[in-house]
Image (tube, rainbow, N blue to C red):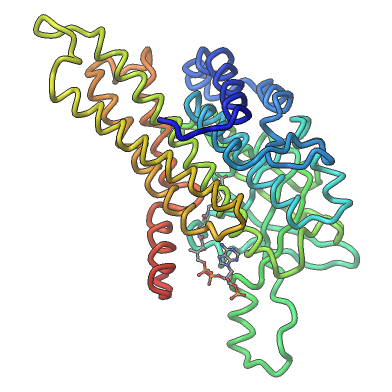
Length: 398
Ligand code: CAA
């Protein structure tokens, strides 16, 4: 289903579709079995301009609007959720906040490399003890002369072992607290969202270690890592934004990130539909293709309706961003619906394939394993519901 797309939108979508059909889909099963995507794909993504979408040309970016970005994320998501994740995280969660909050020097130092695929970024927010409650993270940063010294552990970090630059959120304590504030108020501010600062940490820094997490249910080709920061020293010039502004940087970054995850879910649903329709038309049972049976058509229709609805929700977010309107709640809505719908679609696809859906000679089992993470990362479905509920009522229920 399409609304009217401009020629430019159609061209970028065709470029991404061609890349996915030729360079991603034929390898996706092998990468899944090997638990690693071919790392050479990062440079290819850079060469195609996909790591620089919406980033101005003066920093080497390929510019374009947010709908173009969503169309590319959808195509990459159709091919392999792990490949889409490389771009969503490096571009969406590192390059974009660098552009929005970085000094000119920080932008010039990193953005051209990141958009070219000569460097990769990862987003270090989640910790072993703080997932949904990101505002109470424990990684510490202590000022030492002109430097900061960071120590702590981050977990489930996409691109973690491949990244050259880690955007690390660490506790520095809040800034500009009134001197006469009561002790308990000062403590709460220092230990809560206002006490967090964002740091640009080169992963070659002494004391920085990334350990790959193996044995994931899905998303096996993704380089997902635990990061350990053992007294990592960075200059004060590596603070992104202001001291104490880190949580807002993280949250505003995730608002756009959730759109990108949702677009990837739409692509995954499209892959489920394409595979299921194709299989239903060629698989004979009781003397005719199973596409002739109403209960099979019901499953195909269910995937198709979710797909169309999800795509519209994603495009709405892109449109709101382009028009400078608030989009955070629309992004949560799209992320919630599309990730849950992607799990439903993959589950239905397996049902259409029957026993063949359960072995990895066919792609749909991988779709279900990959889809499952989409309701977890960049904010669980429960967090999206609470954000939508808060927007509706004005009441904070977490
Ligand atoms: N944009 C800008 N500022 C925001 C904001 C946003 N979207 N959301 C909140 N803020 C500001 C608030 O205005 C508030 O500012 P003041 O202090 O000036 O009043 C401050 O931040 C604190 O906000 P909250 O009171 O809402 O903070 P909270 O602690 O109650 O936040 C939460 C709760 C919304 C649930 C938040 O913790 C959250 O979104 N959790 C989910 C975390 C998440 O999505 N993690 C994903 C990890 S990243 C990942 O998965 C990447 C990967 O590798 C794939």
